[in-house]
Image (cartoon, rainbow, N blue to C red; front, top):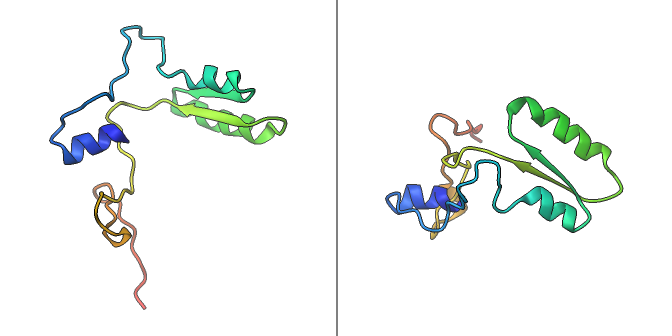
Length: 104
């Protein structure tokens, strides 16, 4: 989400949001290993077709915490969001995805 803020509000000046180590298979931080180090179940999801199984495993696990690492594109955006310095009434949505509210 920090990268999203840097993209939207700081003209794309990205600082310390790219943790690429140059190794395509190495995740930094590795949330699965971190979860396991704390005794939790760590699950990594890299494809849409893995989502249902990961959630099912998480729901079925009742003997320890579960961390699911959903790997998305570095340029994926998280919506809705509220920019700094404004109230929640100024929430922003992805283009064409704002909810339609019933009027009183």
